[in-house]
Length: 141
Image (cartoon, rainbow, N blue to C red; front, side, top):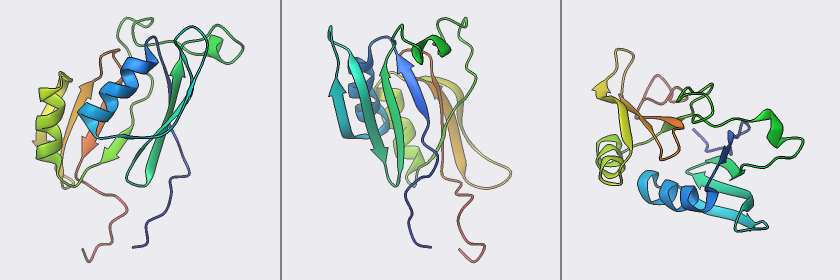
């Protein structure tokens, strides 16, 4: 199957986006694609990539767009979305996330539909799902 770039790119806001970028890269294996610094030690816009996927993030702002966002902290720890990221070496990825302090909310497990997966929170409470199950894989694989 030919690799394509993602058409859907999750976006999120962080209170300390600089720290979040460093941690997401170290704990989850994201790579910096573009980081635009803002005023007062903030991040105006950042793009992080993982394989053929991307997330965008920035610092919490009190502007027109920012007023539509809350953080898990604002919602008593609740999330309204959680990305699923396909990871080939899921057990190694899990061990690294744990070593970097990710809060595991659903331990690594074999899934009935195939693959292995786990769910965790980052340092600001966003939930992330990682798994080896690839819904795009052809049935012959």
